[in-house]
Length: 395
Image 1: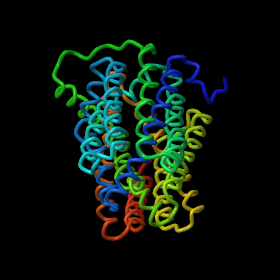
Image 2 (image 1 turned 180 degrees about the vertical axis):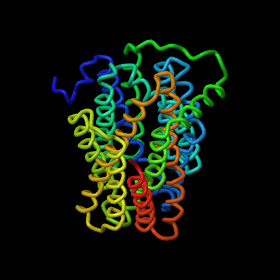
Image 3 (image 1 turned 90 degrees about the vertical axis):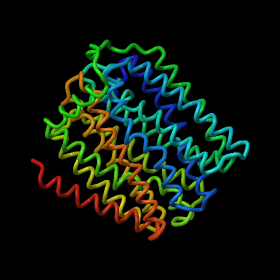
Image 4 (image 1 turned 180 degrees about the horizontal axis):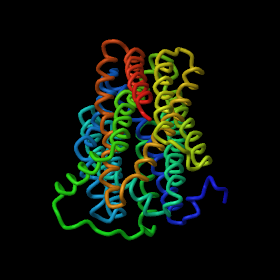
């Protein structure tokens, strides 16, 4: 097998990768369909942003506890439990939508429950990768994990646009329900490397240990600061994509799927490039440079009124995001001690996922008064300035 696919020579990692890919295709279909549904029900960019806030806000509170669970418990059991919960929530959403009983308050409530389960799921999902491959294949495994996530980001939105146009929104939600079976089945059979359990102390004690550990590592603090900037100012543009599709670029639901898929295609290219080049030097500076490209692409996308330029900028944004995030993630995992991996990863996920809902809320609110393009352009500009300062000051 070519070196770019080294990690997939591990049967357990290959099973996990395949199951996660199919599950993520369904999740991206639901994300696109849900945004379009909220826009149909409310005709408001604020509520589109608020639903995204509801789905991601639990990460602000629970990500750190999810990291403790990932270090204290069997990570495979944590993942099976949370994936089952997410599948049940998707089934409720699909049924209510099919019966025309869905309302915005119900969507917000279900989005919050989904975010609750996801916040406990994600740290274990990231930490288990190191349990499935040898340490020398970790960078390749992380890069390929980014590839599967973003390949799903290409296929899922494109499929969602077609399913909405040909069938209905509820069909996207039902497809997501069945997609969870793939990952749950994979998790049931993979073999996970044994770990030394943490001492029998309180969650708060273990959480405090993780915070103290990060405070003593300047590179970890820089990783978290960079992740927060990208999450708060760059990533929320995706929450307003239905507004851009309908009101700015005038392309409808199938066009929305293709716009989302463009960012995913760029991310796949970026992930494959990282996997091919292997252990790149100076990962932190590469992450900061990629963040600058991401911020610039977000600004240019916001100002574009040409469909092909918009596709190009989303392609660049997706590739830059993966290069930035994968280098941050790899730098972090190679820096931390194995016994701290889950807790430190939860702080990273809090930064890159937890601040996204606040960014979505502020961007949706600003878009209500200024319009989506100016809100996204201003946010991207702020990110570009902050990342430039960090790059100049980082040796």
